[in-house]
Each structure stands twice: as C-alpha cells, then as structure tokens.
Length: 344
Image (cartoon, rainbow, N blue to C red; front, side):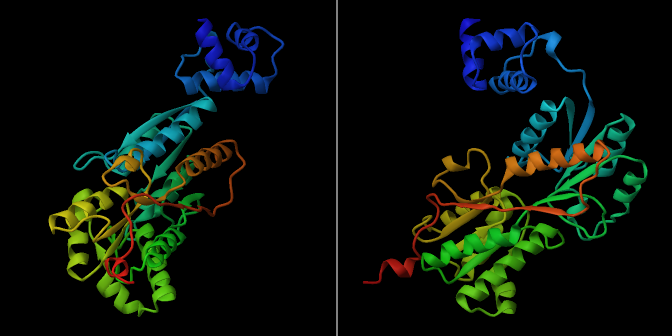
C-alpha cells in the first residue's frame, strides 16, 4: 500500500498524505488536485475505490472500420481514456467483413441511448457514400464527430491530419537524399484522405523535381488496399517502373513495401527507401526501423472527445474541420538514392 501511495503521489505531483486524503474521501483537497490524483490512479492502472467512482455520464459510441491496423486501437485508446476521465463510458463498435455495417452499428448504439458517437474513418471519408445517413442521425438529436475524412455535405465537426502536408514532408525528405523517382502507394481513390495525399504528393513532386502532374499520377501513383498485401502489390508495380523510393499511405502498407523490395533482391534502404504513414505502436522496432510520418493521434483523439462533449453539452463546436499537423520521424528505412552514393 505504501509503495502504491508513493507511485500515485509521484505521478500526480502531490504528497502521499494528499493521496491518502483523496482515497479516503476526506475533505480539504482542491478539486484540481483531487482530479490529478484520480487521473494518476487511471494512468497507473489502479482501480478507483468504489466510493470515488463517478456515476456514468452516459455511453459514447466509437465506431472504427477495423482493429487489425494498430493505428485504430491506438486512437481508440486515446479516445476511450479521454471519455473515461470525463465520466463517460466508451463503447467500441468495430465493423468486420461480412459482419455489422456502420449503419447497423449506429442503430445499435442509438437504441442503447448513447450520448454521442465518434466515427473514425467511416463512410464520411468515402466520396461515393450517401451522406444523408448523418443528417438523419442529426435529426434524431444524436451529437457526433467525424475523424479522418471530410465532406462538405455533412454539417458536423471533422478532425483530420493534414494529409497534403504529410506528403510534402515525405517527398522533401526523399528528395534531400537524392531520390528523383519516388512512388506513392495508397488505398482506393474514392476516399478523401487518399485524394488529399495524391494532391500533396503531386504538388510536392512538381515543386521540388519539376515533374509533369499528369505523368506523376499516371506513373508514380499506385492504388491498392490499405493492408500489408496491398502495400506489397503496389510497391512491386512501382519498383518495376524504376522507383528507388516509395511513400506509403499507412505503416501496414510500408511493411508490405519492404517485403516487395526484398522479394526482388533489393535491400531496404540501400536499394529502395520506404516511408510509412501513422507511426503506429511498435513500428519503430521493425527491421529496419520504419521512417514514417507521425499522425498526431493524441491531439486528434482528445480534440474529438472535447468537440463531442461540447456538442453533448449544448454548445456545438463550429461545423468545420480541425486539421492537425503531422511530423516526419526519420529512422532506418530511408537512405541516399543508389546513384548518389557512387558520386565522388
């Protein structure tokens, strides 16, 4: 117990005596200090004493397309923790191939009286999907926030990474290493983040290498699936077209890109450089450690919760898009272009 008190006190930045007062429900502790102690309990994985457990403010639904890509569990964790700190109970609903659709999951959550819903990479990101479903949900009085993907047809708050800036970061890095034949591997073109990445990639290649936009799209952009196998197939095609570097729209695709390069007898990064996108958990420990563009997951998850709670509280956030800047993380999967190393 003494060790536990010391841990909690250190985490919360207060004395052990203060921790003891909070845990025993004694008066005389400032609300902010009390909150810090309770947050420290949560962070360290200790259960709150029964008397201190807040009555649930209600359920909040979180709908994700899948959990195989580690970026989705990472985002779900940030959102879940932020909701719990505010007294809400997160309910994670995941689509599965051949299983529940986004509409069915939405209906299930609404039937259970959720206070609001956060959608991650949902149909709102698909330019071919019918956006009326979101207007119908608004008519039912259910607040919601949409993460990853934007539609001008939906009057709701959107949370997005700056996909165009992400591509500029990746291309600038590879051009600085002497690469001039850079490919882009990404998912189906109907998705908003895909279109934005293409836009950013084409512009960066045009600005930095003076290439023709039509040629870039025709020769250097390869659509596939957002999976390891998808990255492998797309990269195989790009290597055939002479690419010495490949930018991938997800870390999972980047792992497939490395596999495709190796299957052709190439070494990464000696012969082919690979850049991912997301900076998923554990991606720093791949072989080689992956250079990637880090998606600002903590900031995006917290903003999604803050925005939803404003909607629930009756002070709606502006119906606009909140865009978060990504960051390039350079590791071991990128190096000088093969021709550059042979120069005197």
